[in-house]
Picture 1 (cartoon, rainbow, N blue to C red):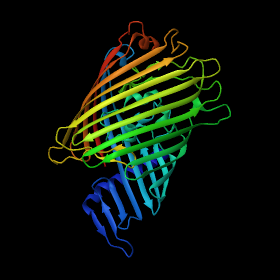
Picture 2: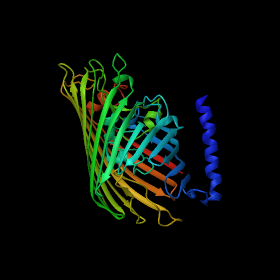
Picture 3: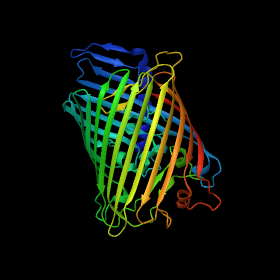
Length: 438
C-alpha cells in the first residue's frame, strides 16, 4: 500500500516537472527572490541559496545477450529489464540538506539481498564547510568508478574488480555516518562508518557488522580540459565465530546474468562451503589522467580474508585499465568534491557527443587451504575485455553499446558445479542501454 501511494505521488511530481517547462524564470517575493529551473528536472531555490528543492531522477533500460561462461549450459541467453528507474528529491534549508532517492526498478535490488528499494535517504550538515557530515542510508565511498554516478560511468556496468568485495560500496540495508571534504583545491577525503544489516554478517544476538571506510584523493591538476587524479582506499570489518564463509562471485560486467534466473547466474570465484573467516580488509588504489577528449584511468583492489582458528587465509586481487576518447572533442567533467568524473556535455546540440572506449578487467582469488569450493583448487581467475561506444544525444539522453569477451580457466569452471557438458571457459556478451536523466 505504501508503494502504491508513493507511486501516485511520484507520478504527480513528474507531471509537475514536465508542466513546469513553460514557467521557467524568477518569482519575486517579499523575501529573497525565487528561481525556478527546469533544464534538468525541477529545481526551486532562493537567490541567496539559503533554501532549495529539486526533483530529478533517471531511467535506464537495458538489454543483454550472452553465452558461454555467462550461462549454466553455455548456450545463448538474453534479458531485457529496467536497470534503474529512480526518483530523487533533494533540498537545502540553510546549512542542512536532504536526499531521498527511491528506485522503482526491481532489477537494482532483487538480487542484492536488499529489503527495500531506497537507494539513499540522508540528512547532511554543511555548516563546517568545506567539511560535510552525512547521516542515514547511503553507499559508502571506495574507488573512482564507484564514486562516479551510474549516469556517467563510461562502461554500462562498473568494473568486475568491485565484485571481489561488494560490501565496501554497499549500505546493505544499514545506516551510517560519513564525513568528507576538500582542501587546497587539490585534496579530497572521506571517512564512513556503516552498520550493515545483512543476515550473513549478523551475529546470534542480532548485532550487525560495522564497516569502516577511508578514501583519500589528490588531484594536482584540475581544469576543464586536463585532470590528474590519484587515490587510495581502505575498508575493514570483522565477523564473529562461525558466521562468514567468504563466498566471492562476479557477473563479469553483465548485469543481465542476475536478472536471468533460468539459464544464468553469477560466476563463483570462491564457494561458501569452506571454513569460516574473521577479519576482512580491502585496499584500493586509483589513477586517472584526462587531456581534452582523451582519458585513461585504472584501479587496483586487494582483499585479505583472515581464516578463523586453523582455517587458511583467502586473498582476492583485481585491477582494470581503461582508455577513452571523445570523437567530437568534448572533455569529461571532473569534480574534486567527491573525487569523481561527471557527464560529457555535447558541444553540438544536433549531433551530440560520441565517445569510444576500451576497458580490461582482471580478477583472481587464492586460498591457502586449496579449497575454493572444490578440493584441490587453490586459485580461480577471470578477465574481461570491453569495447564500447556512447552517444550523448543531449544532456538528458545517453545511448550505450558494449561488446564483452570474458575468459576463465578450468579450475574456475570446476567451482561452478554446473552440468558436466557445460565446460566453456570463455563467453561473449552484447549490452545495450538507453538512458534518460531529468
